[in-house]
Image 1 (cartoon, one colour):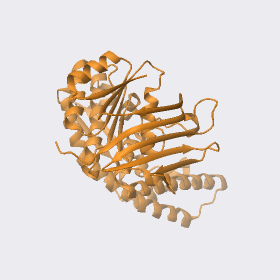
Image 2 (cartoon, rainbow, N blue to C red):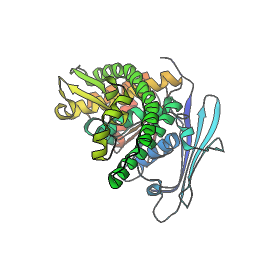
Image 3 (cartoon, helix red, strand yellow):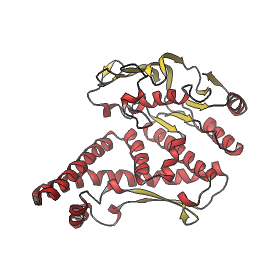
Image 4 (cartoon, helix red, strand yellow):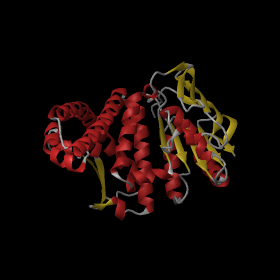
Length: 365
C-alpha cells in the first residue's frame, strides 16, 4: 500500500455545538471508535469534523440549528497534523449568525476557499438517499467530490447555480409582465453555456474513472457481481447546450423555469437490467453505498496525494456480519488515513476492532 502524506486530527474542541456546551476530545490513534447510546452526541462529533472540512453541516441544517439550546453562537476547533505541520482550523458562528472560518488563525475571505484543504469522506445512514432519492442527491455526490478536488469546479458550479436562479426569476417576471427581452435571455444562455460545459466535462471525466472503482468495491463487499450498471445521464451527451437552451425556451416560458442543463444530470443505477432503487435488497443497497463512498476515498487520495479522513456513522446497524468484516478489513488494509467509527454497541465495536484492526482508540460517551 502506498502511504500518502499524513492528515491526522489530534484534538477537537466544541463550544455550544449541538448537545455539547463545552467539550474537548483527544485522538491518539489512526482508527477511533466512538460508542454510546442514541442521543449522547456520537454523530455530532462526526458532523463537527465534517464542518471543519466543508464549512457546513453534513445534514444540510442551517447553522443556527446547530447551536446548543438557549445559547447564541458556537465554535468548533480542530488541531490537525497536515504533512509535517500542525495546523489549527476553526469555525465560529457569531451571535448575529455571521460565520467565520480560520486556517492556521488566518481568516478566509470566502468560505469556498477552504473546500478541499482537509479532505473528508462521510458514510452515514442518510446516504441511502443517493440510491433511493431524487437526482439532486446524486448530483450532490458528484459535486461534493469534485469540489474537494478542483477549486475551479466549485467556482463554476457556484456561478452556474446563481445563473439558474436568476434566469428562473426572469422567466417568472416575463410570465407576469407578458414581455420578454431576447437579449437578456441570450446573455443568460451564454453564461450558462460557459459554466455548464466545464461542469459537464469534469463530471464525465470523473465518472469514467470512478464507476469502475465503485463496481470493483461492490463485488468485494457483496461477495458477488449482481450485474450492477451505473450510467452518467446528461442532456449534453447528445446535443450542444446552447442549442438545447434555445430549443427549450418556449417550454421554459410556460413552466417558468430552466428545464435543460447540467442541473438535471443524474446517475442511472440498474441491477440485472432493472431499476436498482426498486429491485435491490437492503444488503445490496448498503454494499453499493459503501462502495460509492470508499471509491470516493480512493479517488481523492489518488488526485490530492493525501489520505482523506473517513467518517463512518452508525454503519453496522442492519449489516450482516460478513459485510461488516469485509468493510472493516478493507478499511484497515487499504486506507492509511484516520478513520472515525460510531456505534451504539460498545461490545460489538470493541470485538470487531480487536479482531480486525491492529491498534485503535475507543471513546465511550
